[in-house]
Length: 298
Picture 1: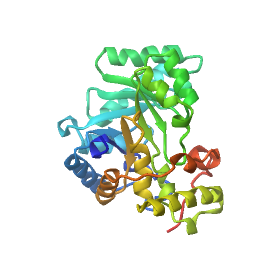
Picture 2: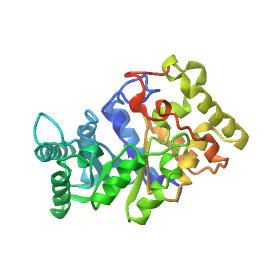
Picture 3: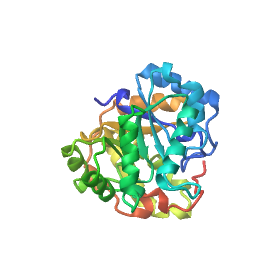
């Protein structure tokens, strides 16, 4: 299934100035309402959010309550205010539910997987599992940055979902066998960063010096897209959609028209020698290594 039903609408843009190509800041609530209405019309069921996404959960609480039919995945950070990880996670989850206007969520994740791998990880996992047992989370999981984290977590704990980065430049989870191993362990997988915060669609002539290392990999993507007779957007989404181990593709947009464009692109086939487009330079494929506040001008 490569249609919009495989998408999970990312909502970081609903509450944050998010994305390397974002020049307008968080989307307005009116625009968010239009995006959600279009998502419903397209058959998208999942919304991905987090306590750390600014006002996103509050916006969803007003616009996408339980009656909307959307399924919610949210994430909590367990270290906050100097409290212990369990107490912090509990407090944050209660606040998330209040903002969302729900008694529970479909998936509850720990946003920083390293906290589950730390000294308090076992206690934090017991808390996470307890939310599932109490019916306040239908499934539990964690957001990770790489395959090593994903495999270490699923060796130690029983998780239903893992969210990880995957795109035509960042193919690590596919190439190193992480995705195949996760599926063998019965773990469902969400792929985020399909467009690498918009970098994959950026104008190469306007790349800032801080992202100069991305120029050559992006040029290869442009060349491959042209050879396949498709746009870079189609090529980027075709790669992720072609990975059978991916259950949901998390994709954020700034407008209903962008969502329509992505939905059309997702249904358009494209083919190339995917492995030749992979980039192993972490300064390019890991946004944590980009300079703070870097933006690509129009």
